[in-house]
Image 1 (cartoon, rainbow, N blue to C red):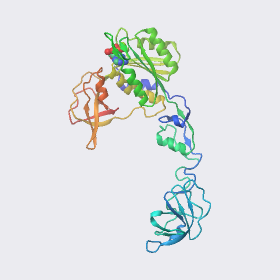
Image 2 (tube, rainbow, N blue to C red):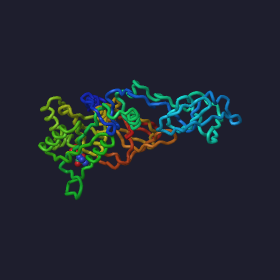
Image 3 (cartoon, protein in one colour):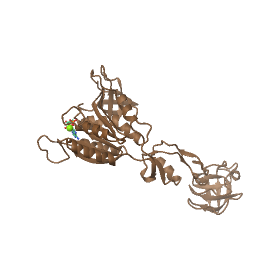
Image 4 (cartoon, helix red, strand yellow):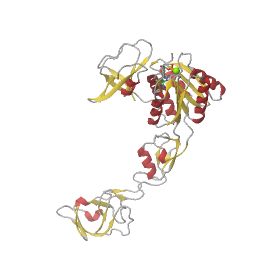
Length: 405
Ligand code: AMP
Ligand code: MG
């Protein structure tokens, strides 16, 4: 057996970020910038008011108070979206609405709550300082400023900023297209079960987890335990996708052909590697990993819990690297065990399914039902994976590291 770290290092060393391309803003959420973004215009594009009120010359309001207001002539009105046509002269004010450009002559805005209007004139009840409630041109972003660095993961707020700069497309690592295929003669998608048959749960789960993670899932259905069928399916998938997940047929059974087919395909194509690993973790000990013509293929184990855990620990970091992300592994959180985790002495790190909650200023966790690698309902209840090293177990009340799902 090899350690989880060694298995991950092996996989990550074989995977590189996808070639950047120009992506429209509407398709870019969650993608990783491949180049710095530099502002070609300033934000905001002109000085404008942060308040509804009156644009004034601050000097005209010196000493103003409720008892001794400064009375100014109102010479105009400015709504947002209107270009100023008159300037504010000495002793004058312009009624102004939030977002409207600050007119020439004015250097401050007095909020309407601190004024008293009497039609043609307005009483200012408070002395303004130059710059009050004025949002200067370029106050957020200056022309030439580096706005986002290469490597930034684009969130909705990033897209808003890019839109404010009239950036319509960005150079990004594209969203990885990831194929999913189940293997097994016993699998049916739905409907009545003939004797010995079960329903395919891995494929819908893996397609959904890919979609949830911001990748583009591609469904390759169920492949029978047949070398020719598997070869055809895997060949087609690696030609059409940036990565492929298969499940099943990677352990020690007589019909575990994924290993055989991946090894043969890797031998036939340039830029290929193949490894079958036994990793010191439970669940998800076996993994077949290949790069076929540079496309990573994860032969995940068949038991549904193992499939998902293997995806989280080994495939997800690689998909993140494909997508250009530098942070490929999320750090665990510390949680207090509500119930004890028993002693283990099999030389493996156990990833128990747990329900994590936040209570009294910290995380607590509790086992999520029966912990067998075929019991997917426990996985469905879980919100985390407790990391339990080989050893004496963890008593209730002690801290454990937990990967949040
Ligand atoms: P295998 O490694 O192919 O022998 O599969 C291990 C176990 O997982 C067997 O009990 C399979 O029936 C089961 N299994 C494999 N693939 C799936 C799947 N897609 N959905 C549900 N169970 C599966
Ligand atoms: Mg099988």
